[in-house]
Image (cartoon, rainbow, N blue to C red; front, side):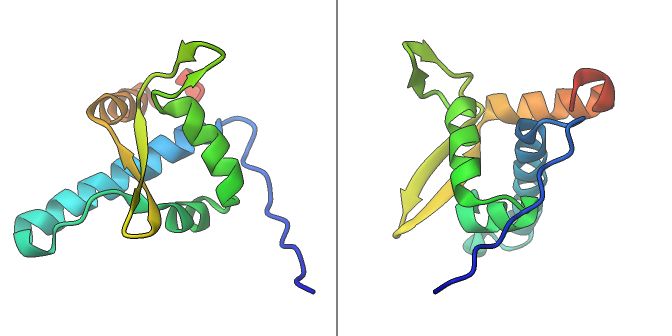
Length: 117
């Protein structure tokens, strides 16, 4: 029988959505740098398990939050479309969209705490 791992909750002062956008924006910037150095090794997005490990959250918690950040319709209302989750070669990959990148940059410029992030 496997033992369940209980992950600590994210700090209340910063919503999970902010952590997700920041992590994906940082990863996108790093991938852009790597692509500039070696175009043949270009990758896009971050695998869901990698994002979960980086944020110390379970994948199921992240999927719920990512659904709200994507353009999925919930109760007839479309989300903002800041992220896109796709299955690629048998694994789930999370990509930040141009809109999400703009929001992440705006939040970083605002200093985070004042904007709730």
